[in-house]
Length: 66
Image (cartoon, rainbow, N blue to C red):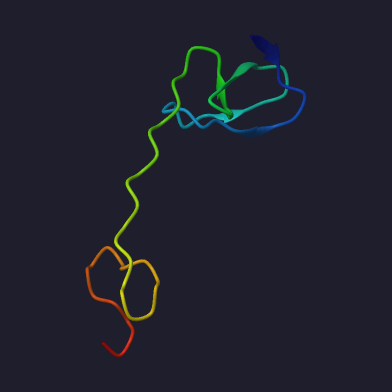
């Protein structure tokens, strides 16, 4: 079901355009997108360091003492 936006927001779709007041929008899987946009896929979770229990950075090197 589509409706007109009453507040500006960020589109969770792939268009990268902001949602402006009056734009036709809809919720898809609890994500607000412009009508016709598809939500971007959630990224895969990164691995967790077994020592400090934080996500391992993209460079693959944890900052803990391990």
